[in-house]
Image (cartoon, rainbow, N blue to C red; front, side, top):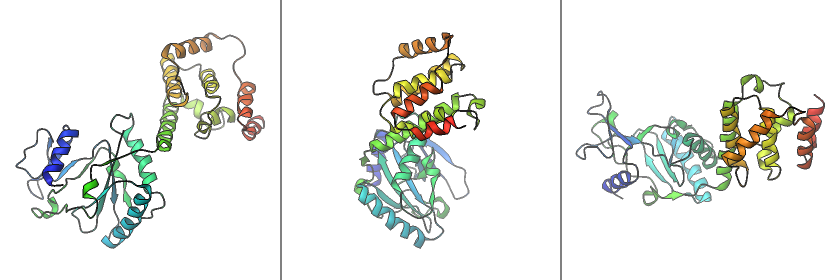
Length: 299
């Protein structure tokens, strides 16, 4: 794969991605997109692509980074993850590029990359810089290293040039973890702060909103009813957003907007006794969560 091959791939898949270069070591950045770039220029950097996870080995010495690289390569080999390894141009660093299918249109790209990063580096001791998991610039393939300009410094990959843009499949358990965290963040964002204060929320509700509850396959529609009742004082749109998000990521067949609005009307116009601890405890007992029930009853 030549520099022209890489450029053609970037142009075909991410024409709006930014590229940048320095005229000299002391000049300011000059930006363009891949689509509007000048092919006569040697670009130093490009944007990290939405479906690209860059593992930046960031120890102080090359020996430390190389030791981490060997462990990481072994881990990626066990996972059968296609990747490529590039020398960053500095005296010590390595960048490991991994491309994952399905990341381009997710609502929280950075969150999903963090989850993938934790999975890829599990059990690998070493120092990593996480900033390249965000919307950041990375050294351009075959680009010049501006701090030693005009010396070429983003060298040929150590391994895996043929796998540089090969997309890997994100395991379903990582998608499940991503969906759970999206739900948790949505709940935290939408629920009034006073309802989130530790000590005020019953343990049974806290458990239903937890990551642990999401591991259960049963009673999820009833859990949605619990959430609707517990947060019935929220503004209509905030409650709707919360219920829709929970429904999309937890129900086998998500409720339609009309069904969610109908549930909200029932909840908000209800004048009798609300869905309380007895109902919630019955639900949790069906799931074998007697310990949570005991903790809630003993508070």
